[in-house]
Image 1 (cartoon, rainbow, N blue to C red):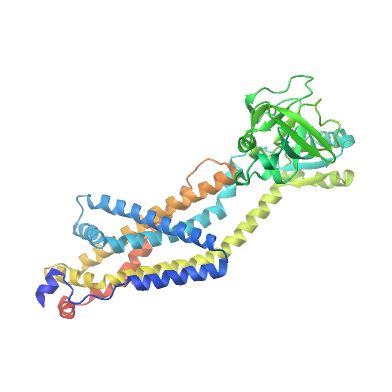
Image 2: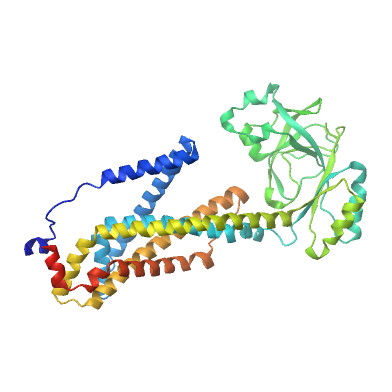
Length: 452
């Protein structure tokens, strides 16, 4: 009847949708568990995705609520806002799904193009890009002289002794430190050194640096000291081959690990307990690309010295990242298609309501062009919201990776993220126009008859 159409009261209610959703979730859970083979990983993954979807939906709800308070604009703008709010459940699900898809795509783009570049940009132009390792004690002066003759002076050379931290205050360190603390330095040999002066990129945060002629003591890197719960005066025992060296902590210092220079967890005084131990030496230096031919001559003259070319390693990492992301991008195309299918299903669920609204508006004198503009605006706003939330989440994800890997500062990638909300708005505007073509093109009389 006509009253049912005008009051938007559906005659018969369909069956509940939650059984279908439950079956789909169980199927997804089972497939991921089948391929992952670890229940905790599956629960963590799906739980994280659920939380992310909920967060994106909540932020989308805030945006929709804020936009509802906007005054002004033409009829098409006001109809678009009303449509967003009236179908807010569908709108929020569309925003959340598409925002997550855009987040994954943008994160991959940023990792592929910007992550390593941002880290390299933080380094000085003359930051060391080569390491010389395994220099014999009797070759130290010759190695330094070789590069000095060619105008490439080396940074400071450091002796290096391999030793394992085995005791803390006379007790086995693995008994003192619980497994929950996960101190990786206890599971391998450490590179120990001795120094007469504090490196420029180190800073003492507790205690004092070694005095001239001092024979005892050890300086510990601050992060490791925190994990082990060390304080000044604690005695550390190191096992070096068949020998043991015990020293008290005399200072705790911070280390700039991304300085591209040799860094050490443990440093001893030059006259301390390491000087009698067998050692090799290590250093780093900057070598321009146009002078790399000197490396061939160096390797012929010093065949036992290992040369580590950091710039080549970075290039290889970038190539690996490029290849991996290309493979993942193919999967993302499928994810984007799946997101559009989900959105099509959501639009279909509201199609009857939209048909009723469109028919009533056109019956009351609204032009077809008005409905087209309002529909395009409504879906453009959905796409814009999803794009903004997606790129914001991607920036946070990339910053977390950057901070964890390189301890880098947060930075916006404007040249990458700015076009994405615009592209997203255009895609969804065209998609919405296509999906709702029955509402926009069929005569209102025919629609009203169908809805009786």
